[in-house]
Image (tube, rainbow, N blue to C red; front, top):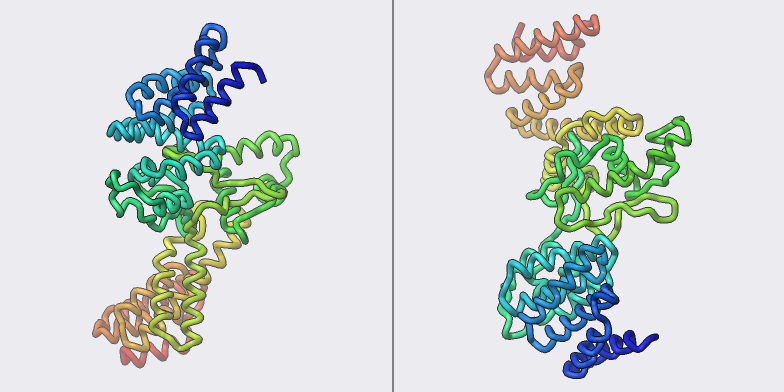
Length: 425
């Protein structure tokens, strides 16, 4: 290690132990030996250290001036780790100067660089050492969930007034994926992904494929077999990694904080387990399971409530507009589950003679399967029970025409018998 590097190490060590006068003297000497015209990078790294020392000595205005020049150099030369350090030092200066807008700008940049270039350990240390600036509401929302908890639990100096509400971590979903109906992918509901976030439908569908599989993971070979099939190997090699890159870029489009939601580990692509997710098909499955358990326990009100919530999630067929084989398999499953819930609730509505609800549910089933005679019978019953015999007759006649024109058959004996009992004809 040469003499100048030794001086810088000593200055940093004295800064850490709190001997600011010695640190200042050493770094001033170093800058005299390391002018910008001879060692530009070395000059500005020393300027960064001097700015940090000045900040520690509460010379905030002077430190900001020193740090601004260093930050500009690091930014222009893509020296991102040094830029992140300069940003954080400027955050502390502006925090103590009461310049909140500038503080937030610098803090956002520091957090963004930490997320983009994996400076997680460095960021964690900054939060531990200086939690006060991170308690700012804008900065707090940009932090990963575990660091929010770290900020929230940090003791606050008496001299700093912090709104406790801002320090209470709220339930956060880092990524939402809705696949029942038109695909919706959201990070922040108030800040949608860019309109052109998905340059190819294949990239979006690969993400949905991974998300819909067990443990949110799929091997590279499985993805290639599913989406490229027998395509020439060279073509696959040329397109596979750019497509995966499109997924990562899409999930960060129009977002202030860049996150890596898609990892490659042990031959599999998977959702990053460090983040939280809301996936509608998982919620749907959970609610159906809760309803089944409640039904077996004869807790019928809980069963009905769970089924009703599941139906709200079903906005339409699985991945509407996609027609891959793997999509059709899932689509069939969720459609059958949806129809089963509708039938169960329609049966409950009939038993309780809640005819308007029975009619509403039956119409939803008919919309999915127009040839269900038993469900048409529910509608005929509902019209008759509500005193609308004309509508009951009209519905029966419409059913006769449908069966005759589409299937070449008449209504079953049971349907005709029901109609005669209700209408008397």
